Every structure is written in structure tokens, then in C-alpha cells.
Length: 479
Image (cartoon, rainbow, N blue to C red; front, side):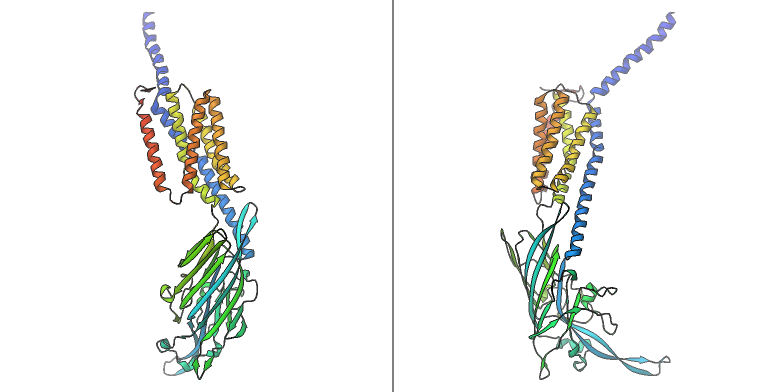
């Protein structure tokens, strides 16, 4: 009997130690922080779903822009005009035994760029809609004028070109646009006072080298290229080449961009529009520009020493690496702004969970881990709300509605859990401050300095709060 009783006592002692271990788990600050860290990492999954939704909607927008551009006119990149001048040369063709040969005549080209080129363009923008997406397109009226004076005579000998073999009556003026679907009317060319019409280029013959515009634009499997040409007669007087003066007018539809190649020895361009937010891009920025509520005007001046290709050449030169112009920039791109806001998503989740951690230490409240998870989900859904609203109304208003709805939901839920309106309102004030700071940061062009200082202040606050905790007794050191 006593032996049986003695045998029971150790078991009874073991049973008494078990509840104390569970109690330690419930009260341990280290365990609480571990659970909060796990919850924060777990909430990265729905947060990434919201970011994937952002990318998906942005892809839909790009697809809509491309669909409209395909029908209206894509980005327009204007190259030319360039003179392609054919010449003949002979080579020896030996017989199979190598003892005899015959002379064969071949044809090739050299290329001449204008000595002066002035461009004047007026852009009329228009906003079109595809579903909830806005697409900016434009109509532009372009006037180009200039002249050819130097035909590269000093280089003919080095090229092996004899003046007597140059076919001046077969000279061709080349020109190209980015998307020929955007051409509104016949391109008008005035060549030394004579009107000429461009046609689609047919430079597929193997009897001469391909042109620069062939390489950049011409699709050999499709006759409808954006490479255009017109036969010109090079005027001569007493066997001396005269200055060849040209005037060119064209009307184009386009979207996204308008760019020009500075093919002139001296190229000047004046562009104006009623669009109030242009983005000047390309290899050269405008020398002068004016932007106000009525639109913008800009002026470029480029000389041949600024670019990568020469004034006269034989063979291939890539004219597309050196262009200038502008894009019709849409300020406040909603997906760009939402993406910048999403980068702070994990910080908001982590700080909100830490707020509940300190609330539970300094106030007599208890919040279950599952309830914290629901609060984290509400913070993730904020980004889905932001995307959905911003596609229909202004981004600033969308941000206000989404952040207010999320904050109100969390405050009401916290009030229901903790039964103390003051604590719930304190949490709401913290969320309002966080969302306000993030909205301010995403408006800045470079938020690195301000963002780093804010993180430093938050770290200092967390360090100050943690100093009030006795981590070994799981209690606070001060009221």
C-alpha cells in the first residue's frame, strides 16, 4: 500500500510541472515575438498576391496601349532624308583554270546626308479609352527643310569611286517613319521647286548594298515597309553640282514617342504641343524648353560632331542609336505609384504587429494570433483596394479611401476585441500616421534620405520601448 502510494507521488509531481511549462509558453516574450515574426512572414504570401495583381493589371494596360497603337499608329521615329547615290565599278572574273578573266560591271551606292536640316513639328495629343485604361495618342504635323551641298567629293578617291561612273540620274532620296499606318496623307516633297511623291521602298535588289534604312526598317517578307523613297534628279550647272534644296511636309498619327534622327550636318528642331507633361528623351536634350499650363515648346540644335555616324559613307550606318525627341508622359502613373506604396507593405505589417505586442505588455489586453493574422490580411487587402479604385478615380483620392477603409476596419475590429476604445483609437492614429508618411514618400522623386531618417526614428522608438521591458520576468519596468 505504501509502496503504491510512493510510486504515485512522482507522477503527481510531473503532472504539476506540465501546466507551469504551458503557462511559461503563454507568458514568454521570446515565444510571442517568434509567433509575431512567423505571422509577418506568413503575411508575405497575400502581400505578394497583391503585388502580382498589380503586375497583371499593368500588363493589361500595356496590352491595351499596344492594341490601340497598332490601329492608330505606334511610336514614330523619323529618319531622313538621305541621298542614296549609285555608282558603277568593275571587277575581274577569272575562269576555272585561273588563266583567263573577264571584266564584270557592278553597281553599289554611297550615301550623303543633308548639310542643313530644320524640323518644325506641332503635336496635338488626344486621350482615348480602352475599358478603364487611358491611352494617349497624338496627331503631328511635321515640316522639314534643308539642302544638300557637299556630296563627299573629297572621299570618292578613297572609296574607289570615279566621278564618271556616278549615276546622278538614278539618285534616290530615302526617308522612313516608325509606323507607316500613321501616315495620314501623301508625303509632299518639294525638290528644287519640283513636287515629287514618295513610294514604298523596293530595295531588295542584290545589285547594290542595302541602305541604312533597309537594315533598320525594311522587312523583306513584306512590301508594306516604313522605308520610303523617291527618285530625284541631281541638278548640275556646267558639270558642277548645285545645291539641292528640299521642303518636306507630312501628317502622322502616333503614340508613346516622337523621335528624329539628326541626319543634318547641322540639325535644328522646334516642337510644340498643348501637352503639359512631356518627357524629353533620346541622345540629346533640348537646348531650350518652356513648359506651362498651356503646353510646351522645345528647341534642339545638333551638329555632326555630336553624333556617331559620318556625313558621307559607304556601307551600313545605324542611325537609330542617335535620336532625340520626347514621350507624352502621363504624370502620376497609378501602377508606378501603387508599386512604390507596395514596397512599404511589409513595414506596415511588421510595425502593426509590434504595436499589438507592446499594447499587450503595457495594457491588460489579450489578442489571439489568429486575430492578428486577420488584421494583417486587412493590411494586405489595402493594396488590392488601392489598385481597384485608382483605375477609376484619381490616385490621391483612391489612396485616401483605401487607407481610411482599412484603418476604420482595424480600429472597429480592435475595439471589439479589446473592449477599450482608447486603445483602438491609439492604434488608428498610428495607422493614419504610417499611411500618411508612406503617401508622402511615394510622392518624392528620391525618398532614400527621408525614408532612411524615418526608419532611424522608428528604430529609436522601438529601442526606447524595449528598454521598459524586463525580458527575464516578462513584465514592464514602468507604468
